[in-house]
Structures are given as C-alpha cells and as structure tokens.
Length: 153
Length: 183
Image 1 (cartoon, one colour):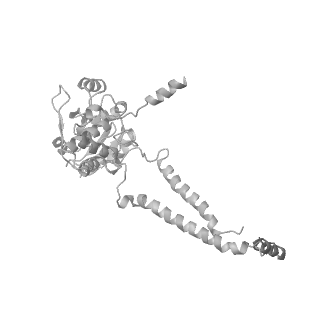
Image 2 (cartoon, rainbow over the protein chains, first blue to last red):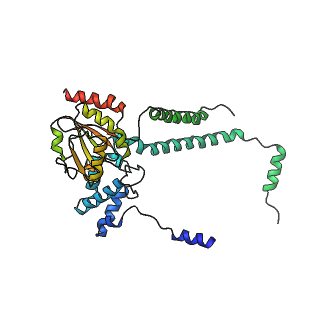
Image 3 (tube, rainbow over the protein chains, first blue to last red):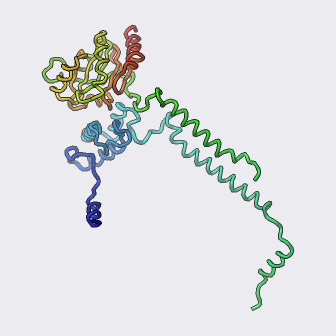
C-alpha cells in the first residue's frame, strides 16, 4: 500500500493549462510568449495568469499573445495591446504611476518606521541600563577582586 | 513600569488598520459597491473597429459603423450563458420601449443561438456572431453577459458586467440614455 502511494506520488506531474496546439513552432518566440503570458491576469479567475488558467478567455488571450509575437511585435507592444483593452488590472505586477505610488512606497515607508522604532528602542535600553545597575556591596567587591586576582601557579 | 507614550503605538496601529479595513468592508458590504466588476478601460473611447458576420442563416451582421448612427445598447450574450437568460426579460422590455439594442453573440453555435431567440424572444436590432471571440477581446470583455451604452458618435459611455437588473436599468441605463439622447 505504502509503495503504491509512493509510486502514485512520483507519477504526479505539473498540469499545464496551455494546449499543445497553441504552442508556437519557433521555440524562441514561444519562450517570449510564455513570459508575457505569465504577467497577464486571467480576468475570469482574477488570481491566475493566463498562462495558468483553463478559462476560454485565457486561451483566447494566449493565442492572441502568440499571434502578435509572431507578427514581430516587441513584448511591450503586445502587453500594451492587451492593457489598452482590459486596463492596468490585467497586469499581475501593477505599474508604477501616480495612482499606485502608495502601493510601491508602502514597504519602504514601513521599513523606515521599523528602523526608527528599533533605533529608539535600543537607545532607550542603553539609557536605562545605568539606572538599573545596583552598586556592589563591600562584600561583593571583595569577592570580585578575589575572583579576578591571578592565581599563583 | 512607567507609562510611556510609545506603548500607545501598537494600540493606535491596530485601531488605524481596523478603521481602514472597516471602511472598506462597509463600502463593499450588503448593498454596497460591487468590487468583482472591473472598471472598463474602454469608457469614453470610441467603439473598436470591427466587422462581424450575421449568425449563420441570418441576413445582417454588425460592424462598428452601425454603432455611429444613434444611441444604442450593445449586449454580449450567448445561449450557453445562464445569466444571459436572467437578464433577457429586461432587454425585451427595453426593446419594446424603443431602445435600440445590438447583440454580439459570443462563441455560440448558430442553431443554439436561434433556439434561444425563438424561445425567449429577440430584442436585438442587429446581431454579429463572434465565433472566435476575437472581437470581444477588442471590447475588453471578460464576463458574460456584458452591456455597453454607446452614444450617437460611437463612443462607449457605460459598461455593465454581468446580468442587468431592474435597478441597473432604472438607475443607470435609462437616465444615461435620456441624458445622451437629448444632448
């Protein structure tokens, strides 16, 4: 039973949404088309790229991307063609523009806040330490001196 | 431990984040804004140039010039799309009231499309058959049905994704049609 399960697990292969008849003969162009497809959102499922999605619209868009790549368009031109029709939302990576600046700046702002917070925390720690330290008693001073005195060999 | 202003920061952060998410939930909550539909990149742009043949066996298809002669609705539908059946009575009502509705029949079999129209009624002035789905991509369509309001110059003024409802007809489509027709 265990062996069977292991065997079945080994047989698992990734399933690709892309169909054999969609793939371009020219492997260079196909590679470019796949890269473009990975960054384009499937609008039916909204959280998959068209490269991953089985939706008919995703298939149509994959075929469209390949056609335009074959026509000799650059990656940017192909992406623009689709953004013109579907808007920025179709891009899985949001572009940097005035309306998305908060999205891009947020991690940096949080990082600055974090560094500032840590800095303050450390400084406060070092400020407080002398106050927390109790002076040694006479007995403790003696013990310390004894401990530190080099032993006669 | 002495009271320290810095201790307030975590609490204030939690309150601030809750307020932001709360406001968002309030907006999208019951009866609120529908966030599953996307803003169209096509609003206020001219309709894409296209030429669609008729559904096999019919006489007139649909092309971009047909949309430049007057205010019209363009409805993308298919016989296999259940929400298209849901919205169909509203289209029939609009057509009876004299609104010009054009259809784009998306990836459908001619016989199925004909049966749909025979059984439920045909609200369309002209229908183009988009068998490959390519023209629908030019319109930026991702859900079915979709309905566009196109003004007399052939510009897209409004788009609705999903079945239109009484509310959409009364609050958006009719007022918009009145406004642009009278202009």
